Image 1 (cartoon, rainbow, N blue to C red):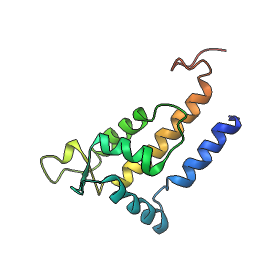
Image 2: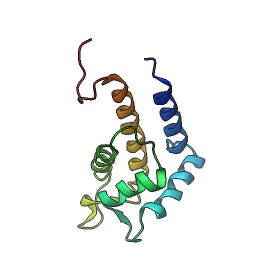
Image 3: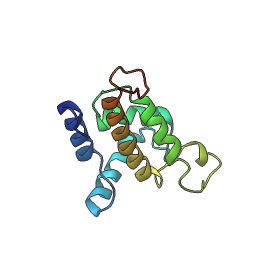
Length: 128
């Protein structure tokens, strides 16, 4: 697929801002984001903290509303590990945080490509 210049630049920015977590430098970058997301220092992230972190820490480009990306990443990552406390299944823990970053990256990229395909912005793929 040939993306327009803006979409291609956005995807490049996403690749730079959101590490994959595969190497030591990526893991270090992901871990550096945690204290910026976990403002109340309780060891868990709720959806509001994640929305805030996506907007003000990661500073992803506003091609579309970021809340759906954050919500999907939140729901996918909070279930990645068995909860250690009764609240664990309702929040993202520090151990699940690398999954959250990866899901944000993946879902943001999906939305960026879909935004490119959805020419009339009706949230549907139309026949051309």
